[in-house]
Image (cartoon, rainbow, N blue to C red; front, side, top):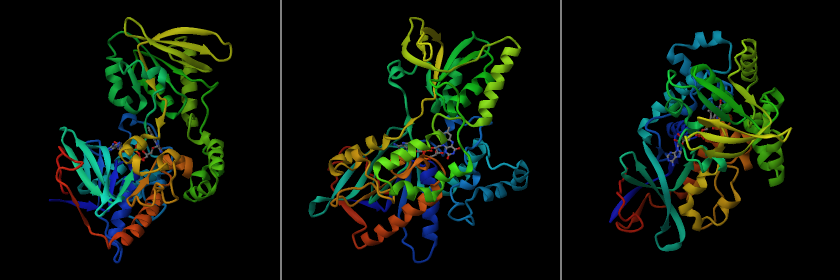
Length: 459
Ligand SMILES: Cc1cc2nc3c(=O)[nH]c(=O)nc-3n(C[C@H](O)[C@H](O)[C@H](O)COP(=O)(O)OP(=O)(O)OC[C@H]3O[C@@H](n4cnc5c(N)ncnc54)[C@H](O)[C@@H]3O)c2cc1C
């Protein structure tokens, strides 16, 4: 007979969402009288990283540094961005910048600095590959706990048992169908831009390269500018369906939708009301670009005309009808001008797809539990405390972060509510865990049961 440690919580993914949760859990453990929650996190990357593939040198945060992992909940926490600056010896210099918007490189350093305090809790370099239900001893109709399977970089499989999950796996690359069929050769999603682009465009001494960037959002604009600046041998075309690059609305009244209190307002609406609120404010986050970057692009294109060397282009009002590989390995796009209706074919050496992110990757991750979840996953049935609404006989709690935009509003995929969301999740977890505490902290598992052939480790 083998006994597994039973965790109170396993966090899948260790991006900002679960990092904020780790901070809040540490506070919980430090306060006398609170429930001590046994927990760990499993992260695919070998070390902490926040969108490393888009960590361009001079790109700025699109959110105030005061919306860091903790400040909105506890400005006295040692994990504030201000304390990070202080400990790094840059607080006074940062003040002189007179900016609320640090570079992403600096914010990445801040997040890594916080993450370093939790190294012992995080299993880096392991990808969660599946989750199974564990039935209650003596009641085959009740699911009591979950077994989480992960695979490390050497291909070894691990398993851990938990009574709750926090799924914080972020988005998956959204690749439109027309491009998915072409394979990945010389086609890069923006999420892998920095790690792939050198290989794709080759060195500056080689032949000129024509690169199309597809998309009208912030990432597309950042990639376009980066290509024009760092690769003198690249002729870049930014292809957008809309008639112009549009600025993100970050005016103060509109920005209130990202306040934690707005989550209650969205959640209280019926399904249609939530959808219409999200649609009404969509231009705060999707297919929009920071105004200074738009102005930078406009000026760059203007200056090309002054020097009569028009190499880079913004192709507005342009729909992509087909994408095919040519015999010489290039990609031929059929581009239709959406105003004139005129279509033409153009060849490119490479594409960068800044086509956004899917927010449904948790469905695949939780697939092994589907027979026990009723229609909770299909219906996107999530409670206000971010718990998946599971049937009564399913006891484990599954908290979802970053995939509840439909129910909790536009801030769900962003950093804006992390500090408060972590607080809400830990409060819910502590409440339910203390109710469960009467149950045994260990569960018996059969050595050769559902986990046959996998390595079992008690952590
Ligand atoms: C380029 C870029 C810039 C952005 N800038 C801002 C900004 O300025 N302000 C803002 O508010 N938001 C911004 N965002 C939005 C972004 O979603 C949030 O900043 C934040 O990353 C959300 O954190 P998360 O932990 O939910 O997701 P992520 O940061 O995506 O982290 C998810 C983690 O889960 C891991 N993971 C995934 N699957 C598995 C698995 N099966 N097993 C184990 N680990 C797994 C991933 O490796 C990753 O580390 C930006 C997004 C991008 C792409």
